[in-house]
Image (cartoon, rainbow, N blue to C red; front, top):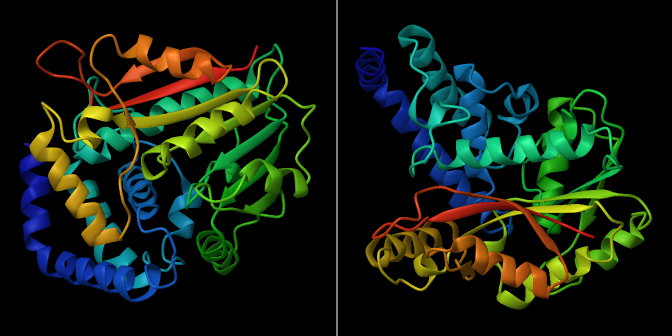
Length: 329
């Protein structure tokens, strides 16, 4: 009943939603992409704002930032986010992409909520555990992530956000415009496919003697294999107990192999056409997926701690994506 009411309200308000979508697409194509600001960074940001307005996952900073970004302008916020907010309030609907932590296994509609929940838990554990908690928090490919601005209670960490200059500059401008304090965050410019991000991090004041938690969310699939493996190897030099958390797409999806030939081709086309970005890297998720990932991280000098799938491993299905945490000895 709640879903039907939500759909009905959304249909009634669809002219406003369409205007919002047109403005979103225009700003993406006219401002974001020409300035080389990450287009794909908008998807998790928008998803988390929707979870916030639905009341399933509080993220007041993401909500405040929405309306002050190149794509998520005030017009987009009021024509899309606030319309969905109203539909959720009136219907009480909190399912699908509004859900948090979302169902297990997850679907294309609940993928981001599943991923968000996995990394939220990993961050909370690393920053608040009694034994050897992380004292530095590094967000690689930070995009418009807001976790550095809403740290777990009791966390005592130095925060770094690493990304390409255009995306970082857009985010900083948005934070300032929204009045969000950010002096505690060190912003580090780099290009993962062309530069050693670790060198830039060191120059920014990163301390290699402190236990560190690295969040690397929604990035590996846009990098080449060498850049991914080099990042794993660089993390090995951190103190014992340091962790790197990351996600990856199925190698079968990237290589357009069964069972993802059709959906993989559609995703590749959409990402290139809509965002002018390219899906490059994946790891096979055919059973046993854990052993395959473990082999890669072990060869790089890390130990795999946790692995979670979006879908079942049982044939003929294989997970489309996986989330993981690896640790230094």
